Structures are given as C-alpha cells and as structure tokens.
Image (cartoon, rainbow, N blue to C red; front, side):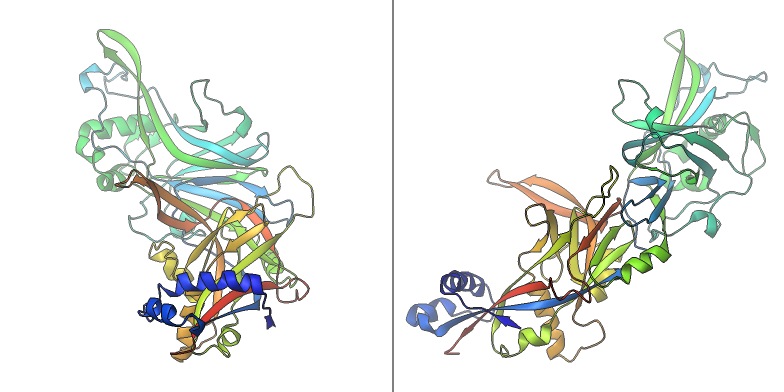
Length: 482
C-alpha cells in the first residue's frame, strides 16, 4: 500500500468527503455535529495497486440490431473475425399490395406473378477494404427463431437445423465499392436476386420467390398483418453466410425484400413494387467466429490486458478489498477512482481497429445475468467510462459503490473465488433525450448491450506489470466522536 498526505489536496478532499458523507443514510446528524465541532471529521487518502488479467469472452448475448457480414483480419493481433447474420422480415400492420384486379403481370394461365424479386442488405458503414472481393450465400430459413429467445454471438442457425432443406440457396459475389444504388440513396446495399424458380414447403412451384409471396398475400392477407403468423406461415427469414473472401465487414442496418410487378394505376401500365424489411419488431442476429487459439494466446500474455470485440476478450480486475478495509473498519469509503491507461498500437496500418468507445465495469459474477436480464448501469455496482484521448484510457471517477459491495460480501462471509473480482466489458449504449419541466434536456440510457463492432486495445497492467501498476485512489472519512 502506498500512502500520501498533502496539505493542499487534503483540504480539497475534506470538502469532497463532507459533501459525499452528507448523503450517507447512516449519518443523519452530520450537519449539526460538524457545526458543533468540525475537528471531529478525519479524512484519509490512500492508493492501492490493482491486479488485472485478460479473460476470453467465448460468446456473449447478442441483442444488437445491426447485422455484421464479412471476414476481416485484425492487423495488430492477426485475429480473424467472421460475421454471418440472420434477418427476419416484418410486414407492417397496415401492409397491402395493389388490388388483385389491377395486377397486369400474369402468366399464360392468367395467374398473378412477380416480374422480379430481390433482397437488399442495406449498410451504412463498413470496416476494411471496399475493393475486397467477397462471396456470400443466402439461405431460406425453415423455421423462425422465436421471439424472446436468448441468442448468443456464436449461435449458428445452420448447425441447429433452422435452414430449410431444399429451400433457397442463392450465391452472390460482391465488393462493397460497387454497391451504389443511385445518388438519391444515402446508404448502399448488396443486392441478392431471387428470380429463380421456387418451390414452397408444400411442393407448390412458382416462377420466383416474389410470386410465392404475392399469391400467399392474396390467399391470406391477414397473415401479412401479424408478425407471428407471417414468420410461421409465410417466411421464417433468411441467413446470410460469407463463404469466401477476406478484407471487409459490412454493417447492415436492415434487410429489405422488394417485389416488382406491373399494375394499372390511373389507367396507365406502371412498374410497381412492394417491400418487406427487417425491423426492431423482429429478430436480426449476427453469428461471430474468432480465431480462438489466437485469442487464447493473447489472453495468456502477462504484460498487459486486452479489450476486444465482438465476443473476444475482457479484462478481469481484482480489487484489494482486504487492504482497503485494513485500519478502516469504522470508516466510510467515500470515493474510489481508477484509470485504465491504454497502450498505443505498435504497428502502422490503414485498417487498425479502434479502441472500444465505452466500457462497463461490474462484478464478475454478475456478467451473465446483467445482460441476460437487460439491465442498465445503476452506478451502484455497475459503472461506465468512455474512452478519453486526453488520458488515453478509461477513467472511472467513483466506483466506491462497487468496492463497498465487495466489502459487505467480505463482512458477511460470502467469500468465493470471485468475490473481489470485477470485469471490464466493451458495450454499446442506447439513449433517449427528454425535456424536463424546466426545459432542460435530460439524456437517459435505455439499453446496454455487448459491443458487437470491431474494436481492440491493450491496457496497461496484466499479471506481471509491476513497472506500470494500475492505481486505485480512495478517500475514507470518519468522525472521531462517534
């Protein structure tokens, strides 16, 4: 334990402790006692070393609405990351196609047909080389993933029997550089044609998938106005798998299925389209695979720790709770501040992964339940920190609630292998902004999920890094008269 006492800082700390201690529900009479005898307050500042190490994430709960499609290599660590994703389609509650008697596209028997059909994988950003040649296969799902299912990042629909045997399998070679759909479109999209002959699960044949959907609509329009019925009776969704290529990862915002046909509008023969798309009302999940052997070798390094997403590496933190308590059994722990400095990249590349934008610290034993139960940071035992270029790291200004939580476990005898361990996890936060009664804008976190974007960084620390220890600065206060 390293101790320091500086007069100027001590005065500032005393003021801080006073304001913090006033919120402690065990010190109801603090104000009066301080006025009567201010000398009763004692403030102590200490610094302790933390221990860190890298742990493998293996797989994480995936609740992001972005789909990741591609295969890339981290130029710094050499880790290969592959993203395949599944998308369900959602017909809006008022979904309609043109009146049947207005459809001009028909076969020789006079039956309604679609002239063409396509799926657009719309993406708003990507990582890597836009000229990298990639190849994917689009598969029709045989049954849907059910609403409320807990999906992990390593879940592969193909391995769990979700793909339809004999269903659609359409291959597509693409580069992200050639997917512009015209100047009026902000986003780009990978187009997958579904114009081949199609046979449904009942053995009925159609000239293409769009014709199948149109005839199903006219036979049962109600099934297109209810997501459950649509997924179970009409279209369970599609799985998109990268089968060749390396160098790009598209960030897909939604999958959009377009059907084109001719209809009569105001007496004119017009080309008409209707669309179905993946939305937040239905599932869109990504299947990630990493080079686990390489990740294991990175986790074994002792001179640093790692944060890597998606579903890659976390940093485990051991808090020296016994040392913090020693000599302060009757004191109040007011603040606990720690910075996890980042180690700069050692190579030069146009495709270096950026550091995670936001990280969460929470008890290691609560890692799974926190995300399984859709919790958000409560700033009692779970806290967030954003990457700061100023300190080149992540600063948690006050995690005293987390330390006090562990102190309570210690005193209650709830000591197991992880009782004093926390974990740093890359996360994504969804927020909403409301206007208060005074007109003040208030931003609130509405969702906290695992970060599924491509990110990677090394942190100072590790099991054998005594030359650059991570320091936890704490402030205790006590009243001599109590």
